Amino acid sequence: MQEIKKPHVGFIGFGEASFEICRGLKSEGLTGIVAYDKYWDTPPRASLIKSRALEAGVILLASSAEVVTKSDVIFCAVNANAAVSIAREAAPFLGKGKIYVDINSASPRTKQDVAKIVESVGADFVDIAIMGAVPEQRHRVLMLACGSGVKKLIDLMSHYGMNIKDVGEMPGVSSAIKMCRSVFMKGYAALWIECLLAASAYGCENVVLDSICESIEGKDLHNYVLSFLVRTGIHAERRAAEMREVISTLKDANLASAISEASLYYLDRIKSLSLSEDWLQSPPRRIEEVIAAFKKGWS
Image (cartoon, rainbow, N blue to C red; front, top):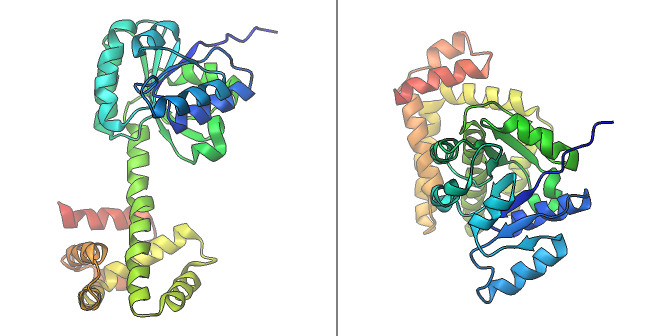
């Protein structure tokens, strides 16, 4: 049996995500993980960082340069706005044979900028988008990965239970998927907040919630989205008028109406496309057709 090469793994940034991933990797038998966090010796955060490192079997180092020097695989897990500067700091210590993995929730452009820095010194780059809850799933959380080092990373880390899905070699694709998904996931939360605050102001939150659930529960989501968007194209004028009344209702209760105003903006744009007559005669049967039609409103 061929012996599995044990990777030397390091983390730049040792917050919750890094800690939980390291705990998971430790449970799979991966030892010798090193990490650096800029607060490693700064109270009050230092005590938590050190206790987490002890629990996860991680060796704390005093600089990112040390982490890069001692590691084959370097995971960068910092704030997204620091991703490029951290890559620049790491670059002098990177080189052929090393894989630099950016797991920050950053834009595709940021990931592409990091990739250029990393690959300019001969190292491989991987853009990872984490698609689940790390505290619950730890190292087994789904990670969408792209970039020059994806296949090498999967070869090295799949032996330790990491759930890495290859989505291509072009940096930024993973992050684009996550960012676009976040339009819905984070926007969905904001939509619920605006809806339920308004319903609460009028004393009808439970009735509204029950009504929404009844409309959605048990539906096949793909078919539901297609049908809902087609009906939006057909009835955009009426729905835009209704949203104006919604905004008035919220303002009468001194409530925020940002999501409703955004909805009106989109409905007005779709109304301008005059899709109603054509779609009543021959409604789109694929989501791609709907998207292509809507794009004309922003061309």
